[in-house]
Structure formats: structure tokens, C-alpha cells
Length: 150
Image (cartoon, rainbow, N blue to C red; front, side, top):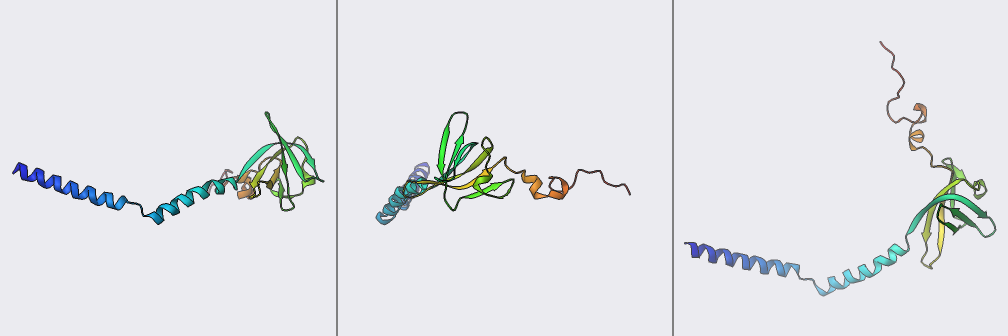
């Protein structure tokens, strides 16, 4: 009885493994597509962008550049006519930037290898809670003011 059980178990395991191996086979056309997708992935990442932040070091309106300084570096970014500027949560212009003021934004890498700033925020980041509910002084939901007793 024990030998029969052992042989049956071994047979089932062998059949199960061979079926799993067949299911794991990769078809040539699928392998080619996966390889092509993997090769394109670094190109997608290279065309992505990155954020920046620091203090506004300089602005060149003629060259359309913005220089941002941090404790350890000084970087100059290229602007475009499509760059969006904000200050205090409202639309702004390049001329609204004040040297020494906090600045942050986003740089997009173009396919040609150029890097262009797509958005710039002059000044500190607006308080999201105050924007969410200005009537309650920035609190979201119920106010912290005392309630009237009935």
C-alpha cells in the first residue's frame, strides 16, 4: 500500500512539474516584445523631469534663465515662453521673482537633450489647508471655535 501511494505521488508531481514548465515557456514573439519594451524604458525615464528648489540667485530676462542656489550648489535653468510662474498660489510673471527668495519648480528633459523649466513657484509653498477652507482659517472640516450651548 505504501509503495503504491509513493509511486502515485511521484507520478502526480512529475506531471505537475512538466505542465508548469510548459506554461513557463516564453514564445519568441513575446520575448522580442519584452526586450524591446525594456530597451525603451530608459529612454522614457531620460525624457522625464525632476523638481528643483532653493533660493533665487539670479534672473536673466534676455536669455530666459533662472539661477537657483542651495547650500552646496548653484544651478542655472533654461526657461521657455511656456513656463508657468506662480507666487502665493496665484499666477505670476518672471519679474515677480525676488533675489534671495525661496523658489521651486520642475524641469523637463526634452528628447533633444535640452532641459527646460515647465513651472516655477516664487516664495514659500502656499498652505494647502488654508486654501482648502479659507472660512475656517485653514482648518478642514469643523472649526475649532467654541460651539454655542443650547
